[in-house]
Length: 339
Image 1: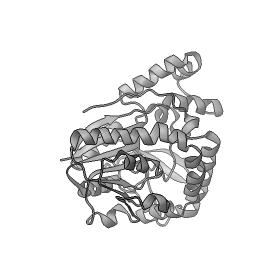
Image 2: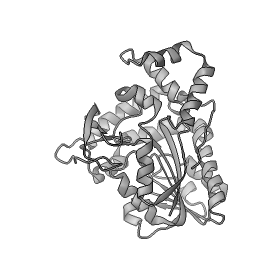
Image 3: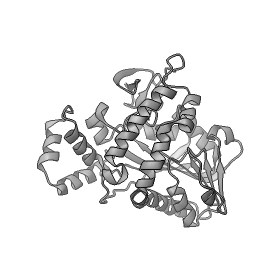
């Protein structure tokens, strides 16, 4: 299994401007109360990674309880809204309108440079290595469409399908030759589509049932097909340090935050061989630094405080590289092959 270490000059403010992201979280909290908080419909679930029912209370966010699996340390929301309510949230939420019209549009250039283009290159390189003649590519529930455009420009695939986009894609984009928009959920069309390569970026975090989701992905992939995922990982430095204070943990975008170990087990259980599992996150140190500067209530271990406040940027970069090298960053990317 391979892994990568990446050091770049990306900064949190380039991808998530703090004022805009805080506003997004505020709107999200209001929309969660409006669209998801219905105690009569909430469902108690076992660990979405290992299935164990033994859990302990962690904290509450936006009226929902986060619990920690005693077996694999996955952090997840339970009880949680049913699948249909979650799907409706993403089609009706005003928070998503704000996300696209403000954060995505205003950070488009930086997101293209630091997120969309590198991800497209990652997929292109591994696809060329493992599938010499790929035909079809599918992206599941993308939150941004810049990446799809980069895949289109790569000219690797004869056909590109976007399944269940969270917002309408412009006609100029959707009418491009070889690109198809399917405005349905994966479970609705899994018997009708097949693909050589599929990707789901940030989707595992927010689906009701990750195991079911991976089964459907396995179903639509052809033999030896490739799957590319990105997700958040509770094993990561900034999430472990900030815990309930982390702005990266909130429903419904992050109702499943698996550990590195449980991610690997879940994929293998669903018939995938992992080709790459990396945590190439570059913001862990900066996220913790910014959080404790803005919120004096956050108490961190003395060593972390010393590292952040008394050591140089060079030390911070080296520590971030250490986190990547030993899979201790909270951003995970996975490439796997259907077996």
